Image (cartoon, rainbow, N blue to C red):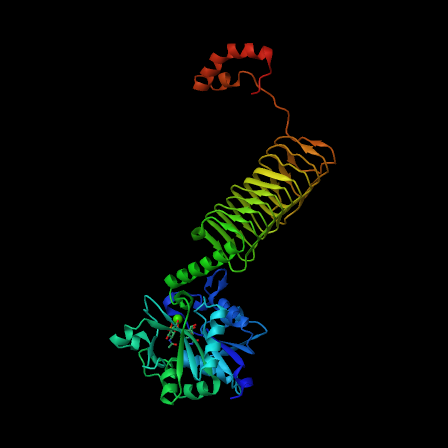
Length: 487
Ligand code: UD1
Ligand code: CA
């Protein structure tokens, strides 16, 4: 074979299985870790090798899996009713009829492999005269994996599934990672010979190994540098383990890039999130999806951010936020709930027990306490008093509240949208703002207070309240001479 042909590479990703052991209505390869489905991680790793084609074999829940992996650079191939990893690869090869290069087979349920490990596997395969090279791993607990049975000369004699293994074979701790490089023509020829006479009645890809050897070809095995990367996800215990290992890798990557992660074990960072230098993440924090955190921001403790943008120097404490933009040096929390479309300006504040949605809050503006702010635009330098509520929904449609610059509102206001509050305006405590407030005006909507003297003694005679009121009245009378009673 010429060098040119040998350096051609196609990748086949196996994703047709049901994943029975997951006991799930979701196909196994679509279960997520690190914010992406298992098979998504496998595809990313495959793409990093820049192969000339990537094929994904589907069958169980075909539409869902095909949709999840669908991309211009991916060919989806349908497995037929014949089960087994060998059959899956066989149908994939029908989509590569004239291909004579190397075929890298990856399993959609082995998500932690890194492209460097695969590149090294391909390299070892190409340097050797082997017809196939298997990625193996030496593990403490080989339960469920195929065992790599070696020859005296170090070559691989066969791979035996646990269910088909003799006690001696089952005692082998070198397992098949489910990742292989094959020379395409040899693979094609041997797959046609694979039968289904095994414990599961399936056409095993692993049987190609013994067939190649019987045909006088050599099969090599290259051990993965770290057994963890070979982890296959067959059940939810392994799913959690894979998620933990991936997270540990992601946390470490950001630590080495200059982020302080105080407690790696309780910090979860999705693979698509990014953290700048000198970010600090406090315990119990989830930084999910495409969240970005700029330099010097402090996030956590007890915070979940989904697809958020956190500005430089911002502080986000005990907060749940989705699709929110938090400006530089802004402060959020504790106990804030930022829903999609929240945009908080530089130096702004969203404080305790505040919920926001579709709300733009200008630079330096503050919503400090006990508020719901939805479908609202707030200018710069605004302060909303405690208990501000935008009544944005009238049972039919959502309406906007527009608040200008440097507005200060009293406590416990309701803004009945649509309503506008002009620049520099103020509102009194308890105001229900139904009409627009002109710039610079003070809006009052609460009736002046009226005290009905002696009401309790007249209307609730004999109660404790009436008794204490009667006793305190002489003292109060004296007070009243000096200052007005406040009710
Ligand atoms: C397989 C290997 C085993 C190896 C282990 C590594 C075989 C026979 N066994 O076992 O030696 O140690 O992976 O994790 O290959 N799939 C299809 N079509 C099918 C069946 C499976 O595409 O008909 C896909 C699955 O979706 C999965 C992958 O192939 O992504 C592996 O299948 P699975 O049933 O999990 O194989 P294991 O029993 O784990
Ligand atoms: Ca598996």
